[in-house]
Amino acid sequence: MAQNKVIVANWKMNPASVGEAVKLFAAIQRTAKDLRRTQAIVCSPSIFLQALSKRLKTAKCVLGAQNVFWEPDGAFTGETSLPQLERFDVGFVIVGHSERRSLGETDDVVAKKVRACLVRNFTPILCIGERVRDVDGDYLSFVRGELVKSLEGISAERLSRIVIAYEPVWAVGPEAKAADTPHAFFEMSVFIRKTLVDMFGRKHKTMIMGIPILYGGSVDEDNAEGFLKEGNAAGLLVGRASLDAKQFSLILKIAERIRS
Ligand code: PGA
Image 1: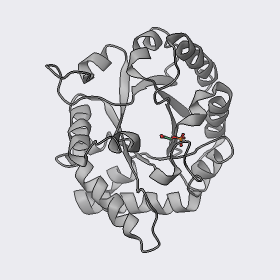
Image 2: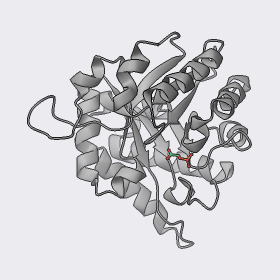
Image 3: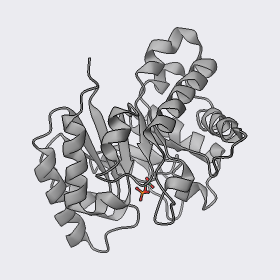
Image 4: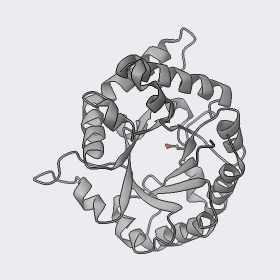
C-alpha cells in the first residue's frame, strides 16, 4: 500500500512577525486542504504557535515545534515544555537538528528529548546526518553512532512512533554546496534501517520498515520529486523553500502526485 508522504516545513527563526507567520500559514493551508495522500507539518518558532493554532483549518496541515525541553515544568529559564506545546495543538517536535547540535546540543540531550516526546505521545522528528561525506566511508559510522546515542533508552514499542530525518549537514542551509542525490539518500535510508534492526532485533523488522525516513537539505521544487520517487523518501524536511508559500505549495503538490 502507498504510504502517505510527510512534508515538514522548518521555518527556523523566521518570519520576523506574527502577521507574516499567519499569512504564510494561511497560504500553506489553502494548498493543504486539497491534499489526500500528503501530510504537511509546519514547524514554526514557538512564539507563533498560539496564533497559528487558532487558525488551524485542515487536518492535512498540522503544527510542529523546532525544539523542546525534556522536563515537564520547573526552573529552566528560556525553555519550552511538552505540556505547554500540547496546549497549542502541537503533535510533532524536531529534535537534534544540526543547527542546534552545532550550538552544543549533545547526543545525550537529544536522547532525553526523544524519550520525553515519546513518553508524552508527541512524535519526535529526529535529525541525524554527517558533517562531511568522506570517501573512506567514516560518515557511515558517524551516522550509526548518532542514531545509537540519540535513541538510548528507547523501547521498540516507542520507536514505532518516531520519524527520522536524514539531513547531511553539508547540504543544509544557505551555506550548503548542493543537495544530496536521491540515490545516495536511498542507500542511506537502507543503512539507517539496517542499523535499527541491529539495535532492536530482527523480530522488529516489520515495524522498522514502517518508520518514515525523510530527506532534508536544500530541498526545492526541482529536486523534491527525485527524493520522493527515486530516493523513495517517506517525505521531506524543508527549510528555506518552506518560507515561500508558492514554492512550498508546489512541493506539497509534487508529493501528492507521487505513489510509491
Ligand atoms: P534547507 O534546511 O532546506 O534550508 O537546507 C533544511 C533544514 O535545516 O531542515
